[in-house]
Image 1 (tube, rainbow, N blue to C red):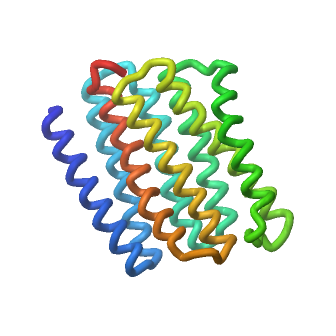
Image 2: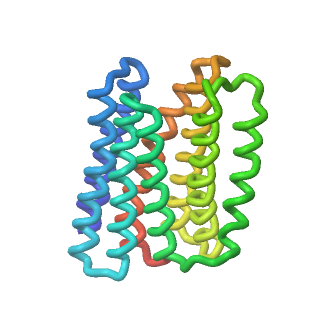
Length: 225
């Protein structure tokens, strides 16, 4: 079963990368929706593998899958309404955070990692001179979103620091890529510095979601998790 699971994940990885490249080149909400659906579908398939293994990682896997679901919706809705899309993404990050707490119980020291990420993020949002949010409300929304994703990434880092393993490293890298992608999205949407930010956003976002979807399976199969 492990071999077939890895083969299936490899196929999905190639599909997501190819679709990602096509979307970067051509754009379009339909292509974006298909690409987003791929990482969620992979999460569903990996959860099925986890349920068949009957391990203690079921709650972690389900919560992470819910996070992937909201990320998929957020990614699609972002093209229709930026604020609604951002809200769905934020909800997804909350579920990611909770899922990580099933791997390693919440500790107040987790907040340290979150603040280390959040503080410079807020400084960038509020002090970078080339941002044009079109009003205070959007700027506040970006700050609140930065708060949520910073503590999600901070928890992933804390989980890895608590017990260093390949499965936890995959999760941490996935969340860091997610954060970087959102940072690039911020520059792409609210500044006109360079169009390269849009490419960097998409080039890191879908691999990030793949890693999180893959971690549902790998965190169960891995002996050191």
